[in-house]
Length: 302
Image (tube, rainbow, N blue to C red; front, side, top):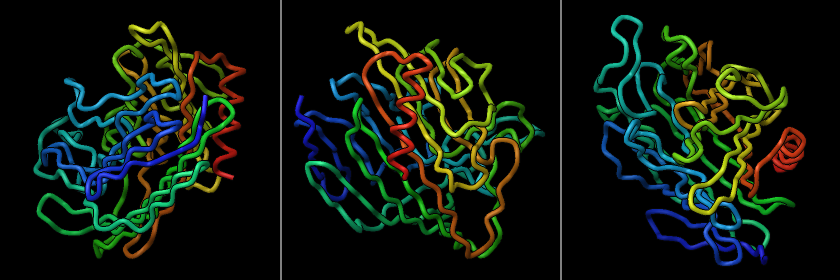
């Protein structure tokens, strides 16, 4: 199978990265979703080298879940995740605080047979229109021995004029709901699949564990094939290794969350830099293969 990379650019809207002419993913960098869903860039569809789908967009149970996306439910008082916001006093409620991550300009689109690199600037606005973040985001795609890997890098500068804590529903009072960050939601057929971790594979009992990487493996409908996804946290990230929000029993989800159980303060004018690698491979993975794939993902961060 040829693995030469390519890119189709729908200017002002999205890029589609391909390998041998087959789609690996589409990155919608200028989203037009409803305000209540906190419009923001997202990756969907995401596919293995052989074409199996490993993401879902706007599932009926959580319309604001968008494949793989940088999503923060508690950025100070504002919600850049979508949907209702949790508060200990009255639970999840719509609060007119759904912000948006708005594309400003493309800074780079470099394409070769071995690598596709895309960089762009974004402005984060509250629902009332105030800019609170200036962000430079860079995504880089390469093929690996067993699949392909996406390196995700963000530099978020707090331009709100005040210190802002990044948290989660758990820091707001809901136990075991520490989601927020680079959040992946898998397809319906991955429900009750296997969560992968350095501590060994499992299911929802791995929620909240600290680890340098985690992943997911499951079978596909229709094709009787299987797929694996690994997410690795960069060793230079704040609070490395992070706690992880992972789910299997209700739906497939993997999310490294350095603010899972403790808010992360972002001082006014400061820049928060974070890097991740997301590896996508065909086939089921046991613990040994998961560790080998994680090594490839971490190599992409080297």
